[in-house]
Length: 422
Length: 153
Image (cartoon, rainbow over all chains, first blue to last red; front, side, top):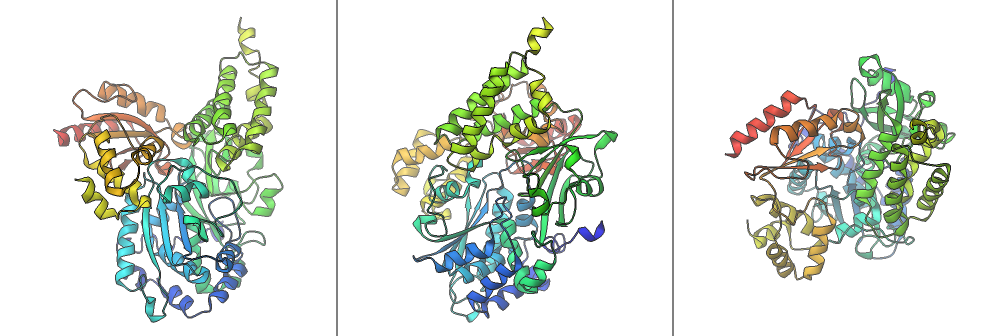
């Protein structure tokens, strides 16, 4: 078990003061940047590709390929953007990364910018994370003073600047096109794709957008080499993963693990199981946009190949444990209210669909739902996942769909319930 | 704090506007943006008033109505929900004598729901101003409110 807990990104947590660049440097910080600046940018991309690193925000796109696309894209200036809009309930790993070891993120972004040929970096942090914003602002000032940012970085002729940008309360900013709109000072509404940000991103220019955890991995890949990093994981999932464990567990918190760990080991051994000796009823993976699965699937390893067999993925690494006191319908209503509130309102399937879904769920709550309502609900969910413009509307139905798949009775059992009472 | 002052601090670019407007709003005792504030931001940035106003209505951390000096934001997303955030709201409503969404008569507290504040490991949680309070119990809530009441007077 203990061999499945591996401190790589979290190694300096509690060891360095987040306010001190000296601490970071004393503990090996910015050594990877010095190494990287002595390498050919193409060689950095080769290492990142060899590492097998995939985006840690949830979608899992290969980072090396994204980096290479930006390098190859025509257009100037080029940007690296850090998606620190960690708004998915149940996720808090990025907050820890920013508040416990901010320079690790900066170092990863500067190396990425050098490899991708970017001139400017932006960290977009959700407005609720006031503390993260302050810590990053301070870290950037320190890095600038130390010569890791600005003109002619470490005498190599490489110029790069970055700033922190605050959101102001909008979940959809986590979607990359919506985030770019917010960075341009507009309401965060997504748009049609392609083109993708690697060719037309911020201000219409080539942009590498990655999650906080993804960037934080880069210095380690440069330090140990792509192959050694890949060797840490499984064939399909390399490196380590930060897990945000929450809900009904004895020890909720942040854990860094390798991909050969099972969901059950995370919940029972790291999380200490469910309080009060109660049983796990269901587990939601990734956050409200993720699937809700039964205890029978908890022996799956979090590795991509193994989870794919059940159409699952560990996504952003949130694991929300829900014990046997919970009512599936109550949980679903809460999740759908969340999405309804956060929908940007641009496309019809998401904006109107979520209101209609809530109306139908109400019928299940008060027991007036019919078979026709269930059919309508299923149909509506399909329309939303297929026709919504962005990930918000596409993923919003996942929770209900998986409840219908694994806990169907909890919904179907309420059909005609009001009649029986009479 | 003046509009110009906060824009100078953040850099006068559309991308930095959200952060600047939030800090400006936080600096005001009633935690909201008036029509005049919005017009002032438009004038200083050279953006149309409609554009600045669209940000105020789109992003949930802005308010167009006066609020309390302390804004109590309670999370009710699933990790907090399954850890009893329902009771947190009842506790606060009882202590403050207001309902969710209202402001106390003395203008001290406003009670709001918030989307997840990324503190799920200490659920149930709430945020007041810049401070996050986790692992809430009725005793803890009473003591936090008591302290703020004393500090706010």
